[in-house]
Amino acid sequence: MILSDQLIQQEIANGNILIEPYRPECLGTNSYDVHLGRYLATYKDRVLDAKQHNQVEYILIPDEGYVLDPHTLYLGVTEEYTETHRHVPFLEGKSSTGRLGIDIHATAGKGDVGFCNTWTLEVSVAQPVKIYAGMPIGQLIYFHIDGEVENLYHKKKSAKYTERSIKPVESMMWKNDF
Image 1 (tube, helix red, strand yellow):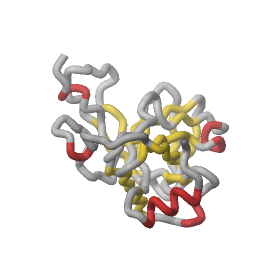
Image 2 (tube, rainbow, N blue to C red; image 1 turned 45 degrees about the horizontal axis):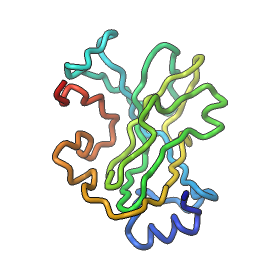
Image 3 (cartoon, one colour; image 1 turned 180 degrees about the vertical axis):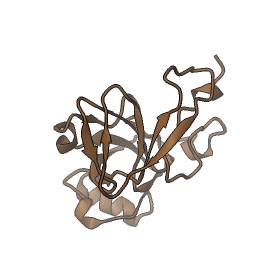
């Protein structure tokens, strides 16, 4: 079950969902619009290694915007810090974003119950597109979960993305045993 606008507001009031900054005008019928933060990141190396810590370079998006190029993976970040303690958050692109040829995630659209952070975006484009910090970039949808959760994400010892950041966070695949 997807939470409606009234249920999202109720869960915010109950402390089960936190969105900072929260702007009432960003609440839709059954979602909340999130915005692109000021930082992007790109990997320094063209060939990435899943067993190595691949380093990134950060880009501060200037006020006049920044042009994204095809065939480059950009890591973006939401302006909004969120916490979700009793629901499964899903991040989806907005239709207006998609109609510009911007994809905001390759595979990581679902958060876990207990996820507390900004959202790192895996941004790719179909053609060159100029983007701006603060532009609407996606929407959060909250799903009700049945049953109690034993292992909240932010309390798991194996959780890799718990350090609060205003910058995109690179892949931590290298921390896995394989």
